[in-house]
Length: 498
Image (cartoon, rainbow, N blue to C red):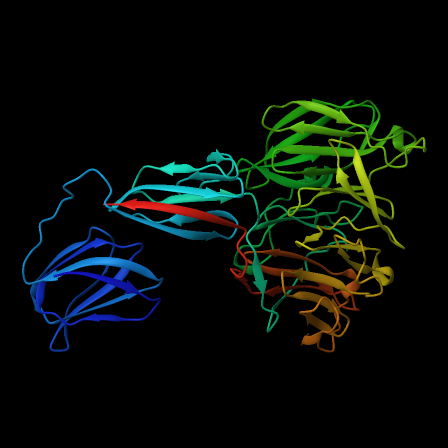
C-alpha cells in the first residue's frame, strides 16, 4: 500500500499493517523507522529518500519518527514494489519558505524524487554545496532566481554572522594566572581565534589565542605579533596581519600567517610617505589602513587595499577639514549596516570612507577603546576610558542617543531582546534596553572589576576577560546557543518532483 504521511518533530507515527517490504519513495530529511511483530522488534534503522528494505520476517506495525516536520511517501506491504519514474517530467510541485540564520547553511536536503528547484531571496547570497562561502560559492544577486537542476543537497551563504544567545547562569570561571592583558587588547579574529595585545610594552603575552574547548590556549609566541597594526583577519581561509613599518618607509607590509603563528609570506604595498600607521580594518575583501601623517602633524588619508585584485587607493578624510592635522585612532566595519566607524580621539563618527561622507555621533569624556564594538540592528555598543573612568555607550542608531552614558559598566552581549552587562557586584540582564534589569550572577568576595573587563562572543561561548581588585585575572565562559528567533534572510522555494 502506498501511503502519504506528515511527520511532526519527535512525534511517532504508527502504521498498523502486515508487511515485509518497505520502500521510502520520498522524504525531506532522514527519519527513523522501527518494524515490530506482536511487540517484538523486527528491524530498526535510519532511512532517507530511496531507501528500500526487505525484512527477514513479516511485521504488523511500522513506527516512524523524525527530528523535523516533513511529508513522506512510503510503500508498506507483503509484496515488493518495483518502481521507476516513467517520465522525465516532474509530476508534483510545492512552494514554501526556508529561513536562513547567517553564514553557511543547508537550505535543501538530498531528495531523489526532486527534479528541479528554483530559489529566490531579497538578500544577496552565494550558493553551492557543503562549506559554501562568499569565495567558493556562486554569487546570486537579490531578487534573482537561481535554478538547482539536481536532487543533491543545496547550501547557501549570506554575508551576515550567525546569532547566538548567551546563558548567564553558572558560567565557567577559568583563572588566567599566566596571562596579562591590557584592558583594551582583546580582538576577535574568527569563531575560535582571538588576538590579545599585552599592553603598550608589547610583552610576551601579546599573540594569537585559541578558544577551543573553552580554554585560552596561546598558539603564537613570536615577537612579530607585537608589531601588528590592529587585529589579524581572515581572508579566503587564511590569516593575515598588517605589520608596522618605518614612518618614512612609504609602504605597507601584510603578513600571511599559518595556524601555528608562523609567517608564511610578506607582501608590500605602496603607501604615502610619512604614514604613521595606527589602525587597520577589514570588510571581507578590502583592507583599510590609516593613522597620521608626518608623526601626527599632517592629515591622514585612508589607504585601501583590495585583497582580491591587489589594487591600492588612497582616500581623503574631510573630518575636521579646517585643521592642518588629522589622526585616525581606530576604524571599525559595521557587520550589520556595512558602514564605517572612525574614532578620532574622544569623538566617534560613522559614514563611508569611499565617498568621504561622515556624521558625528558622540564625543566621550575619555578616549574610545579599541576593543570590538557590539553591533545590533537598532543599536551599537562602544566603550571608552580606562580603569575608574571606563564607560559603556549604548548608542541608538537612528537618534544617535547614548542610552548608557551614565552607566559605569562593561556591556558584554546584545541581541534582539537581551542586553547583558557587568557591574562591580555581578552580571545583569535587561530585556527592555536598561529600563529595568535583574542581577543574574552575583560575584563572590573576590570582586571582579567591570571597568577593566571586555568580552568576545562566538559560537564557542561568551568569553569575558576581567580581573579582581587584587589584580588576579580570570576568564568567564558563558554557554551560547543558536538564536533562530529572527532569520537573517528568507528564501522562496519552488520545488518540482517526480
